[in-house]
Image 1 (cartoon, rainbow, N blue to C red):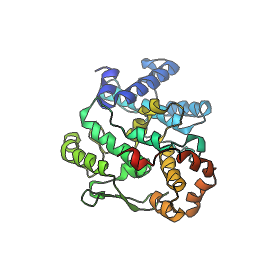
Image 2 (cartoon, rainbow, N blue to C red; image 1 turned 90 degrees about the vertical axis):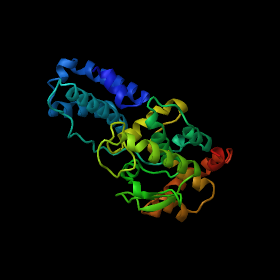
Image 3 (cartoon, helix red, strand yellow; image 1 turned 180 degrees about the vertical axis):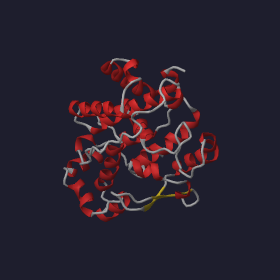
Image 4 (cartoon, rainbow, N blue to C red; image 1 turned 45 degrees about the horizontal axis):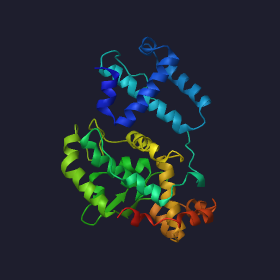
Length: 293
């Protein structure tokens, strides 16, 4: 099995291309596969330290690390290495989460992300639509999406119970009608086919294991060509949805409950980031609920 075969089998087209690029760049810098076969944990840590000096965006370093870890999983799976030197590597970098008005998406741009698009792996089409829906309609954090269990979804009531995190409160949010249909199809038709080990996690990877967040980040990365002039990340999608609700006149407490902010000051921060200008921009478009009907 070649690296290309491995990436094509385990990731979407967009993610496979991104990983292949980052892996190729990594191999060029360290001296090729021969060097990779001998790389130690300490050497990987040193490589990441160099990346932090080269890139000021922690998300970029995270993307490269995910690609490198994927490469070493391939080496182990193909029998070229007996160990994975980066399996214990975790980034503690703080990703910028302040509201950046220039990065916020207008309602029509958010609606663009929801449009169905073909996927190389048919089993992942509904799963990916579920993920994007949870980002755009409920503004969930990546960690919240990864923590969802099957029991958190109530299709009859059209709700999703969102677990608490260190940054957010638990809450129950309404699902859009299209989300209910997609979730039903995913749960009834796709999830059982993806499942390779017993798990009650809602979302599974292409390998059948619980989705922990890596796939969410890279699914969003594959959508970046749709909005080349914006910094598209799960965070900017979430911030855009929250900002839109405020711009449309919803109260601070109502939006705080929706977003799960533990402190009202976190919601107020959106008002302190030139949201009057944002309000005027948002009002030039139809509300999101009309864009997607």
